[in-house]
Image (cartoon, rainbow, N blue to C red; front, side, top):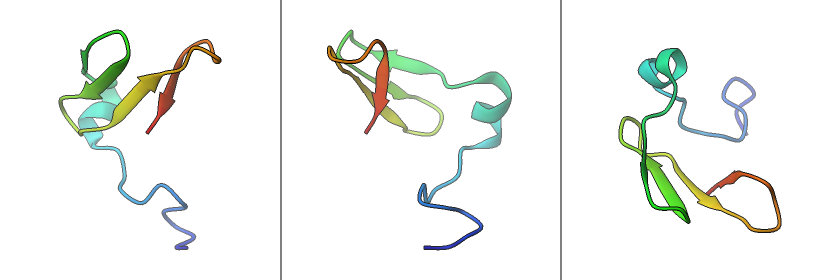
Length: 51
C-alpha cells in the first residue's frame, strides 16, 4: 500500500473534484461519464455504494 495514495489507487480527475461527478445510469447502477467511477444502489443502505 502506498501511503500517498491510500487504498483507492486511481485518483479522482480534477473536473470531478471541482464540479462533482457527472452521473449517468438507471435507478440501480450509475457511472460517471468523466472518470468512469461506478456506484450501485443498495436497499439496505440509504444511498449509493462505490463498486
